[in-house]
Image 1 (cartoon, one colour):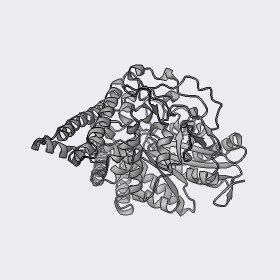
Image 2 (spheres, rainbow, N blue to C red):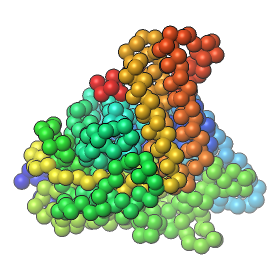
Image 3 (cartoon, rainbow, N blue to C red):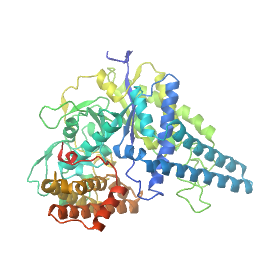
Image 4 (cartoon, one colour):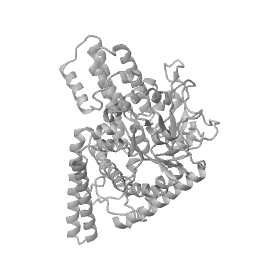
Length: 568
């Protein structure tokens, strides 16, 4: 049997595959969906995850987490503006807790006053960790763990653009190339793995977008192979041959000429407990393999009905102290307890439940491997959004710590990163057909493409066509280079999958539309400036100032060059 780190894999392998992402919010508001959104995720998820990893190392246990950090998240966490915003955010939260404590004491509410002081100390400790322990650099701290071989950091698309619905292959190339370049600049190497935005995949096939003349669109794996990526993640339903149904695409997709996946792929089921070779090109490609989410372990955490976070002793995410009319910013004092009469949170009782749930999770992993991959060469990929652990589920970071400890106590399970799994199983086998789809509801594109988001995709496709024309006509000219580069940044930002997602889910509809429209307007203005310069006319002082303002506000990837768009 194969071995990893000298350990015989008698039952199989396991990894937590965590996907960390935040849209570009710096310089675009503060609360509740501006920079506070990013600061809250850092305080409640990213810093706790760092602590979990180092606690495990201190216990003699390597975390073996496969950690996705999207490029747009890394760029923000490394931005000096984030460091300033984070300190201000923590100071505000700690001050809020102190005010709550004084008010609760005055009202004779001793238990809530104690909780308020607990929150104050919790927030101040996060600021101390950020500044003193991690030197205000969360990304570098995770990078150090990767250098030590404790975890594996994987890459992603530049701004998390939803690749299957783009009209231009060049847009996908820009997202992938810029994303890989951002990773190399942070870690000095290329990523082995890649988190496709929303696990959105499409195979090679005919392009029916306007003006394409039936040209062939490359499969997503072809863009990854070109940049040396060895693996990505796919939705488990798609891996089992259940392609995304066109019934999920209830918008006017036909008017947009977006290719739709077939209702029934007719494919033989594929095990979600293997890494399958994917090559829809029918031509020699560097090996690119697909892992997928394990549904058995996933339901234990994702389900709102039977999942662990629904335990009545855990902190209630939704109810916050609203005495001062600041519901979005208020602190949380209640547990999940049923009914309108919520019970106060008890941190010690909540932590005791974590241990029991972690032990149960380990047993689910062991039984799943024994049942689904009895040959001993399978892997369970427990894939989740990192922000679930600590932010949405406050006790989730502690759960990760206890679950990894519990699985480490089972010698028959090899805890590995996905890269280590591939090293132990180098033979990719035959290429398998992977249907088009995502990890959205129903496995299709409907979360991002529906009647409520049609207008987004109409403008996205128009911007893609404009960018392609501008690069053809003015790319390489020194006179237009600066403006064209900023136009490319705005295109990256307007094509973020977060905007249609937030519109569909209703989480931040107004913010999503405002952000999308702003980037579209900036792109259109910059496009006109490119043509003005390209025709030999000079820009006015006010036009140069407008460009400088765009560069200051949306300064992600200052090194971006048009070779990323052109596929170089």
